[in-house]
Length: 270
Image (cartoon, rainbow, N blue to C red; front, side, top):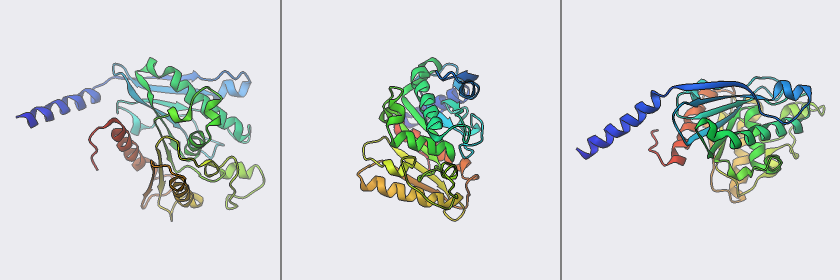
């Protein structure tokens, strides 16, 4: 009987989340920058449950090589009991990579300031995104200077979960210096440059090493190894077999959900 009641209560909790009404606010200007391009571009959307409180907050950065793409609320993050923030950032080559990274940091800082207005918990902020968006999140995680500029400690982020982020200097940053995508470089714009042992959990997800873009899995594998060698205990690396750079996105959300449940102390189903 006790086990039956426990299952019944669990079912009620699941049904209450599934039955939640969700709202979305669009095109919120998140920046204090005043130039025309920033005013046009630096907007975000927020998707949130109407009545839940203290929810995990997912900050999602879109992909597109830092030179294309638009903010989005991924369907796989909807109706999960999450507050989801989909943010734009300025794009290359209209701006330099410093500007794009600064925009990403400002968007995360906005999420910290406004999380509770949408039922979110600022202690449970997850920074994630695909490809270029994953790269931006990795840089915010490992080089604390970007978020510090907005009075946010990078280590106050709950966890970072880049989907196929670039671990060396991003190929379009190199392109602006006249280098090809197959000419590797590690400088201050490479997450690898900033490996450190004292950051939040870092969950690296990539597609099949033989199908990924420009050796993306191999970069992440090296980053994971270096993080462990410097003493970081919570670096995880996943390879999604049979999936390339684009198709790895959908199955990656299951890994993201699993790590959120682990952080919440909830039961995890394989």
